[in-house]
Image (cartoon, rainbow, N blue to C red; front, side, top):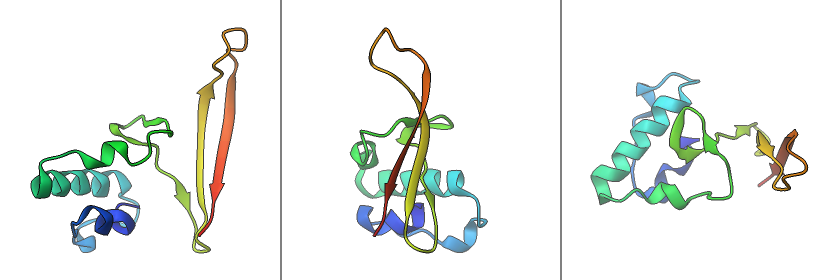
Amino acid sequence: MAFSIMGLFGVTLDTRKFSKDDRLGATIALMQAILRRSDRASWVGAAPYLPVNPRLSTVSVFPHTNVRGQVLFEFDFRAANEQDRRSHKRTILGAR
């Protein structure tokens, strides 16, 4: 994910420095590169409607992607209605 959006923020990361599944490390490196380039945390407003990532509180949850270009966000949320505090599962699908 970090590699596919790094150009939007005007930075380039060396993809060889990260393992195939190192999304967290790549995201941290992306944020550091953005701050070095512009001194502003411009990623904070990238997806304000998504829940916060539990492992990295300055970014949203990471989506699941596939080779067909589909993006899947899956997360738990609490209902806004105080009468209904059950945990729900919500999925947002998108495609290219």
